[in-house]
Length: 198
Ligand code: 5GP
Image: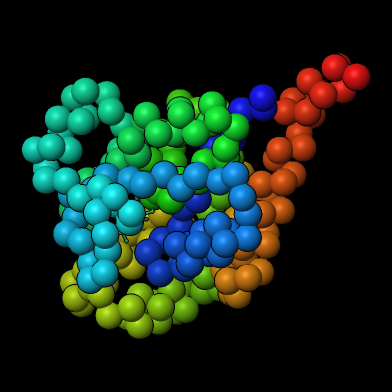
């Protein structure tokens, strides 16, 4: 059985990447979404084990010490990390795995899993990013400014990614991500085994 592939999707808060990822999941099978762990407080409507595993700092640090994360980072004052076990399990099962993580984490994945495909999602402009962040009404003014500042820094690192998707319209952005996924799976190194078997 062909193993699954790891796709890393990053983009600043407000880039709309979570909505785009949801759209991809609605349209494509054989995909697994990695549920991260975080020390940030749950937002209204977020459910433990579905949106995130919400941990206190002590438990998060314990999991770091046990090598339980494929990558982890601090982002706007909180820890975020990708639990390693489910990733390995689903890749072995032949499912593609999507990680929604920020730039420092993506850099760690690039080093640890050179085969992973990195995609950066960005809205059509910074003004639009600010409009979307304010429109969410989930963050206070200080946190919005922190997230905008972080977004500028993240964009400076966009050149480490394999692909950039501009999220103007969600359906279009999701189509582009699915096209990238399909193309990556057709790479000779992933398909040569079929040719050799005929
Ligand atoms: P939020 O607090 O808005 O849910 O997420 C803040 C940022 O943390 C987003 O850019 C999101 O992609 C990133 N993030 C979520 N989970 C992880 C993770 O496991 N590792 C890393 N490095 N970043 C994550």
